[in-house]
Image (cartoon, rainbow, N blue to C red; front, side, top):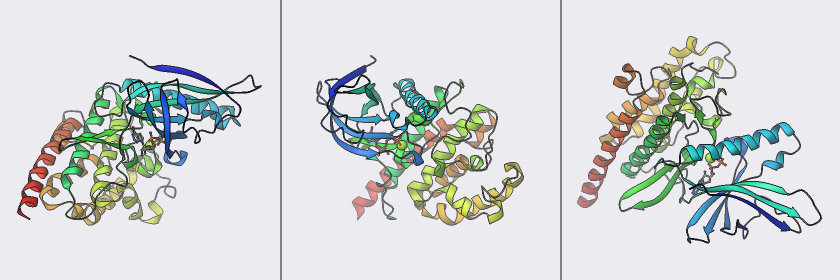
Length: 363
Ligand SMILES: Nc1ncnc2c1ncn2[C@@H]1O[C@H](COP(=O)(O)OP(=O)(O)O)[C@@H](O)[C@H]1O
Ligand SMILES: [Mg+2]
């Protein structure tokens, strides 16, 4: 099943990672056009994304090319990027059978050997199923915009988190640009979670397992902003996924990041970077800022028919205390209950769909 290639091509001058359009990898994947250039600031791995055609079956693919050699000026950095890119592939393998995680179809190296040179220059390539893009610039914030679509996105991503949790993994970089849209099947939207490169493993074998935070700093859970982490894997990693899922609710309805809103409503001397005391000491102040943010900026943006239920879900998912995060009954039984949150979101989405059909029919 594993499709791994090792392609060496002879060239006069090697092309740059963002100049590979037209290249056919392993006589199979023709890179058609550049889609995105990764920035490390956002937690990415220097990946450059292309749309490609699989010449064997005609399918369109997404190919991420990682130029790990670019950092050759530091052996340490080189090793690090190489390790991260390899880990991303390993995580894709671990997630191959998860219906809600973007699927890898092949991976390997693409190397260029310049005329007269004895050493090739190689890129790591990950070939994935191609989606239609991420949800970042795809959200309709008009009050009459579809709540069904938003709830369905949350239904899909909550399932992705549950699937990863069952495999003792946490994604830990859930954010709008890592939520990928696929072609709808009838009126069912298909959404998947992408970019598994920053995942955390329960086994402790991943490169980011003992980092306080490896994902995008703009989407940090509140506790990690202050450098705080629980000891138990679930309270640290699954709880961070839960927070980011809750933050995604805020993005979809309010167009806001809970993290940014909460920080900006804290007194300046208690903000991260300034306050050096312990998280537990100021958790009540943070809870107050969090409650205000929810009441003032987030909850009013939720359409009335979903407001009560969805605001409970946001509260469960983003509780400032990672130990209290999750569906309350499940928490008392010792888990975060994200499967329950998923079922609830599915029911809410279906109800919103019926509601929207009825109201559009009566318009
Ligand atoms: N399978 C895919 N299909 C279509 N677009 C994708 C796919 N995967 C990623 N993208 C697009 O490329 C961007 C970067 O991909 P990602 O894997 O998140 O890399 P990075 O490590 O640079 O963040 C995404 O934000 C999304 O817009
Ligand atoms: Mg990304």
